[in-house]
Image (tube, rainbow over all chains, first blue to last red; front, side):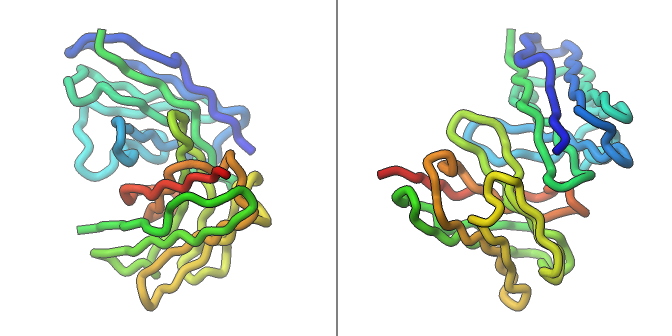
Length: 108
Length: 117
């Protein structure tokens, strides 16, 4: 099983700032099959990015993903008020599929 | 519009059984892998199971293997999760999702399962 470790646990930022979230895998993720989700309280997760860097339909271009092998990053170039949420990385390469523990992006 | 609607959650005693259903609307579910993901109260996401378009392949997280069974009825656009031998640690909101490949692309609103005496 691939273990995904996200850091930091919490990121305190202001609107307009850049957010950089990290996800490290315990082994190489084949084909860079890493996705990123955003979740707000009481809501289902929303797919942002898959295959490390491909934005899902309707996702604004301030969200970008990068990385390969075992190290992946989600960047939000300029935080909007609606971007404050919890973000999860997810490997969709090997069963059992796994999620990271999440990074909470909170308003400073 | 793609819509997924889960049902069947509720309160069940430890050791009991429950069957969750997920109705798929706005697309032909037989064209997609379908997935269950759960989230314990206040915790992160945990992938549970996935089933191939024709039901011929199924995979589970280790913690539910042998206790949970994923299945589907493509004629009715329905996905199921049969859960037995339920434990307190199975308490969670259970989401069904439509796969884009194995990525959970569209999600339902979730159904809460509470395992407690």
